[in-house]
Length: 272
Image (cartoon, rainbow, N blue to C red; front, side, top):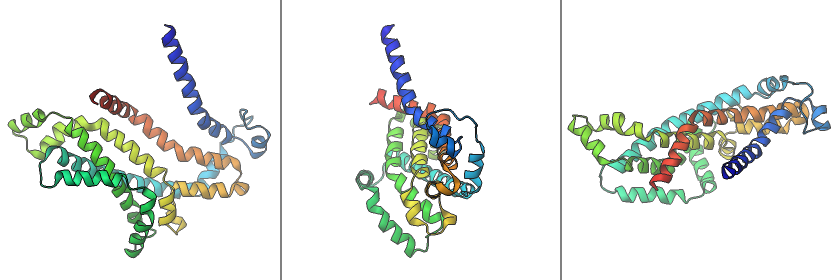
């Protein structure tokens, strides 16, 4: 009993410590500047919801949100499709050079991302893809493939071959076996990969800043820095409101997919 209470208290303390910075930002986003400078650790005397409207309208967050949603959703959909199909091929289909290709994916994981920024930028420039959605989405898809393929390959490899053999004996072809039998069993890994890729693209700052010179193509992270630079014009309240708006979608996605994410982690712990 004492051990359980101690563990519960520790988890509660850890949760409060982790959530406090987010709660603090939310409270500051509902204050006027005078109240913010007077006391940064008190509850707002007046809840100024107008700060969110100012951040959304005056700081052009609607445009930044649209750009970020298009880029993130496109890179997520196409990246997941490539990773899932390639992972299945590596795990369940025997073809020439399979081990060599897998080794190349592992090698790519050891290449630091900043090293690739300038080469990818020059490729985009030479292909006329600066300030375009394709120029933004393509590198994100390529960046997600190495880790995603390895994760999906491990997930498919963990499934017994008897499932595929039984499905083929019942008349299922390769594609139907993949769609109806094997793919649903890898959904926890797919959810994990979805969360990792979404957070990676949604919160990225360097590539949107380098790949775009047109403010109309800015993403929400770049837009957030533009808003923070104008804090003396708009006020601190809208700046904090912009931070909340920026992180809201990420938190919502994790809440929706947390069941699959935790399941993937625990499955890996049991099997590993």
